[in-house]
Image 1 (tube, rainbow, N blue to C red):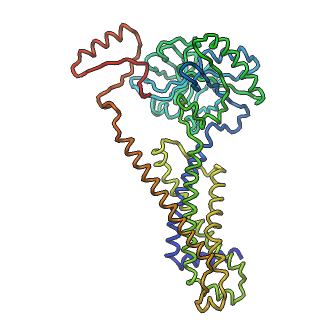
Image 2 (image 1 turned 135 degrees about the horizontal axis):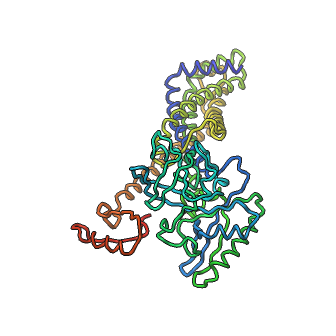
Image 3 (image 1 turned 45 degrees about the vertical axis):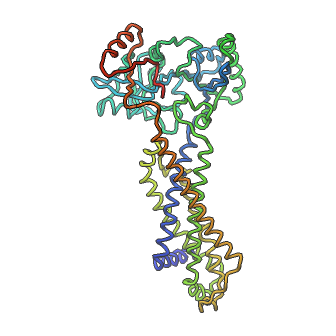
Length: 505
């Protein structure tokens, strides 16, 4: 029976090419956008989920309350991990890192501007999985002077040459030896990295010659802890409170500081700590909004299919009359019409998936993300299957009920009864909903376009083309004074300013 339904459905689609083309285009555009939206949502929700890792990983965050008000930050003092290890001697998975956003890397005679450098200790690989391609990370983080490159960084610095054993310079401050090449950092991690350097190699020069052993220094240090027992969070936070009271809160002028544990999976969506997060954070409501947009697009496409199918009722009436005269039951006719819808939708899903895969690189470039369409991902396969079933049922059930309910005699004479008032109201309601949804989306797109034009054309208050930001290798008063005098003597330079970082960073 199913084979017969599919054969009839294929014949009807082939016979009614105009009907097929209109419905295909309407469904295709909506499904492509819906698949891309679903991939974005799946990607965002996958952040910092490490399959197979039994340890619950937390980041220590900083809550401060002083004269300027309350502040929340993921940055912690550099001595915190050492103090926590002393306080919690049973917990072995405590890691302290330093995140360097921008550096100049010298490899051989070439210089590269690099981003996302992490100074990591020996515990770091136990909390975050590192896929080693070549070399070994066994001693890379337990001794000073060593570093690990990602595959992309190794290719950039050394091309096809072997990177293991080569040496690179970071900011002309530190020279390290490459011990391993690892897989690139996952695109769904809150902690991106291109180079991992032994934390023992970290020097005060990387934070403006500020001391690394002072509790009052908050530069770019992050503390992580892995707990095998989730019930130990209260004990850990009690230890953190004791450390804060002993080392920070004893100074009344400094205000009050609290250290809290933040689950790894909360980092990507928690806006409280977005300002100093190594990667971007996203508001969960954003996912709901774009999810609703995808849903409205699908509903509009389904309504379009329903309206076109009911408009074809007169053309199909004779077919219905003949089949009923030959003994076909209403359930069999419903099955036949649904099979036609399922076949059309299956073709749309396959074509839309191929189109989404083709468009994905452009979407990634525009959104600056690393979204993948992986058919081994069960979430993606499940979504495509549910999307196929949902569109087929929503699009096909109403036309199937209408067409299968025709009287055989009236159908053969092309004398269809006047629709009931409820049926007319339903059709009108569907059309109104379809046009309303389209207008809301069009107006929303116009508003967003105007906002982006405003952002791109709004005067910044300064002429950015006439301001140059130059990184300096050292921070010595005598050299800075001499540099200021020499720059001031150059015609065309109106002002000179020194700072630890660019004001817009």
